Length: 193
Image (cartoon, rainbow, N blue to C red; front, side, top):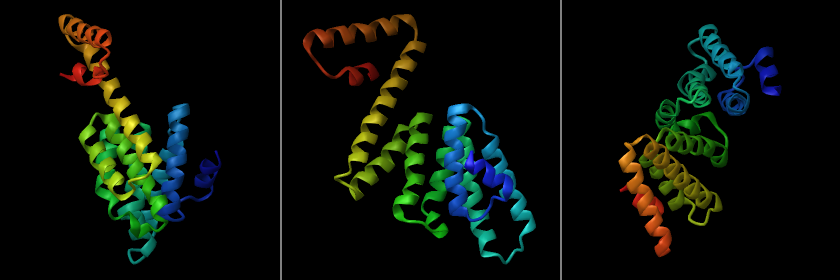
């Protein structure tokens, strides 16, 4: 609610802050279904671009990084995870132009991985997770992300299995029963075969 009030009072202060506002507003949208805060922020940034002079450094950062990041968060909050992930791929390596620490900009990569996983693009999510694990090999967060992405992949397999013809679902169930009798822990591997 505080971020919403800031948008109504002016918004569009600085691309870095606008992105963080978009994260808070996206969380609100995910929990309440109300995307009006994100939509207002996009509208405010678009209006700012129309009103500001072409020589403004702030205008350039907003145009090239800030507004596209906020739109990506609107995609995320709308459930358009593939669009969000693709937008963040395009922005991730240039985001240092809007400032902040590596840890703060890491929110872009974390959101990208989550959006990719939710969209079913496990290879894209795995690419950035593997990159993260190389850079931060002892990261407990990376371990938790790997577990979460594995769980999302398994959930997608289960959901897809429910949509398969009935005879196929029975064969997957039979493999699971055999695995449980034999004590195998390869349930997700066998289910995907």
